[in-house]
Image 1 (tube, rainbow, N blue to C red):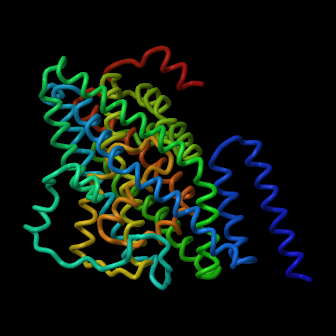
Image 2 (spheres, rainbow, N blue to C red):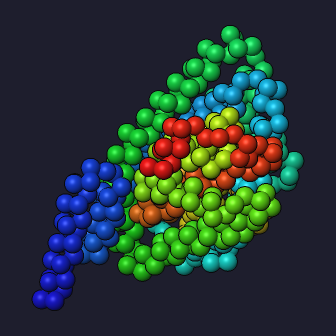
Image 3 (cartoon, rainbow, N blue to C red):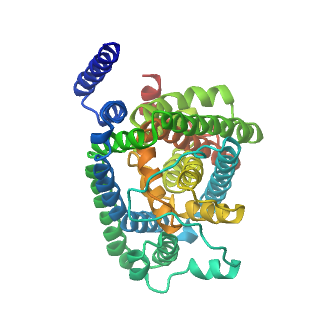
Length: 432
């Protein structure tokens, strides 16, 4: 009797969450509802829940179709969209140097965190996808170097060699940026159009994410028991702890080195950070971020270049998450990766994570591509679907805060911080 009562209580709680989600008219509450409902199904009716993995598999297949065209188009636009590379000047060079240093440090912190916490160990995952787990055979450095350069871009796309696609996109973007404006414009417009279409494609697929989350969570709990939730909670806590460490060990020292007012910056970034955390979308926070940074003292021309460029090249929170998630996927699938293999994977993530910060849960695209490239099982990726929304909010907020700080750093580096008064419109928006 007590079991029945508790089941009714849990179902009533889920119904209440569903009513709340219906009133909010947002996808995020529905993902929370699906996460709880899937766990409940896996606990109470495991035979039914074991059949639900097909929904998460369908979702992952659709995501896989997005990977190559999205990364190809966004990287090309991110590199060539600023025009002639020689015209970017000191600001562009300094911004790109800062971006790469910070994202590399984020990867290092994520890699250290997951290796210290050992999240994913002890999980026995039943594969639900076509990619099977297999430890990558050690390769010589020259073999790896040769492998990252494509010999046929169509072949690279067909085989899911996403690092080769990224390298092709970088060379193509640089070449396109060096072409005269009248010749560059049609191709750039095509890439921009493809990028926008793939963003919309991703948004459409994301409407299926609650169903995929319910199926993944139900299957996970039914096949591994309720104890697997502890492992997933461990991953979430690892990410949040690593992001705090990133803020303390990287962002705070950067503010001290460049003499950026810490309290003033925290006040300025509060609004865009809150928007990013609540919506899990970097683009939603872009207008507020640019207004607040200009009001903070960063000249408009620096804000207009650095923050949008950072959305392609400075995804510190996302790269930190990918370091944690990729190693978790390997461990949960029973694949042991040596330190050299982990570093190789991190190098891949540094390239493939560029340019797709604007779409909610877009890092799932990169994680899935990485898992396929390194022959990791996809079942642990489906497991992470259940808690991805919790991690997406945190990593998106870190991305936005990192880009706001980057604009202030470049302004200080150029000696331009606080030299131009913010426009009246910006000041009114900041006060509001």
